[in-house]
Structures are given as structure tokens and as C-alpha cells.
Length: 244
Image (tube, rainbow, N blue to C red):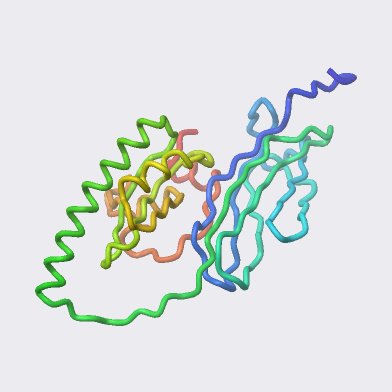
């Protein structure tokens, strides 16, 4: 306890969406939620508690956003002019100087892919069917290893390239996962293959898994949406898509 301020009652910050893969020159935006140690929900016009949010992007100067009230916010990471993995972190500080835990994440920046049409032969179709079966087997093998290592991640999909040189596993997780030991075992199972473990958002998961929304229609993100706009917690609550 320092004076009348408990130094252990640190503020809370939670990130809930960022587009995991963007194109070169595309703006990256991060949606997040901040509040006090007691997770109190403040009214729209209540500025009794304000916070400073610090955004750290690897290779760039820190950005600070001042006097943010408790609730939902969106900040910009800016644009990137080179491809590759871009690491970043965020934390918030309350008016007493207490820092929240720092959240670490990354996004992947890629150049647009040129799409070329190709008519599959009968042999290609046979290879395709073989790949689909192999993807199913690989999916459950990876799931077993995730359970073995007690990792807090939900495997969503497995994809093999047509030449079988690369295998990708897509997963969701509430926080960053240390999957180094998992990756070591996967390299022993899938030899001579490049292995990609990719963290995706919940809407990306819905676009892959498909399903029906509370409106009775197929998920928008799996039926026609190709670009996901930011949705804050307030909007999600108003549409009854989260537990209040």
C-alpha cells in the first residue's frame, strides 16, 4: 500500500480482435478493452477513471494514447511497407501510475497474391482427395500433441499445400501460446515439411468452420464477408453475441 493507493490493484487490458494477416500498405487496427482492477463497467459519460495506453511496435517508436476512459477502444498500428511478422505489445497505465500486464502479439504482412486459374486433371483430383484425407489425419495428430503438452489452444483447421511441402495449423487461443515443444514434436512427425502454426481470430474461425447465427442464417463471415471490420464489446452486447 502506497499512501491510500494499493499498488497491487493494477488496471486491466484485454485485446479481442486484430486482423491476423494484412497486405503491404494496409492499415492494421487493434480493438481492445480497458477497465480498473475490479473490472467495473463504466457508463458512457463516466470519465472518473482514465488510462494511458502504450503501443509498442517492433522497430518503431512507442505510441501513447492519453485520457482513454474505461471501455472499448480501437487504435492503429499504422501501415507496413515490408513483408514479414510484425511483433507488437500494449499495456495501460492508470492515473496512479499502476501498469497493467503487457499483452504481446504479432501480425503477418504479405504482398497480395496473384490468382491464376488452372483446370485440374483427373490425376490432380486424385492427389487432392489424398491431401484431404492426410489433412484430417494430421489434424487429429496435432490435436493429440496439443493435449499432451497441455496447451491452451483450440485447433481449428489443418491445410496441406498441393506439393506437400508445407503444412499449416490454424488455431485460436485467449493469449499468446508458447508452442516451441509442440513444434519440436511436429517436426519429427511431419518430416521434410515446413510447419506453420498460425493464431487466428474468432471471426476467422467462424469463416472456416461455418455455421448458423442467432438470426437463423449462415454466418456472415463464412457466407459473403471478405473483409472484417472492427466490432467492439458494446456492439457485440447490443446484438446479443456475448454474455453480458
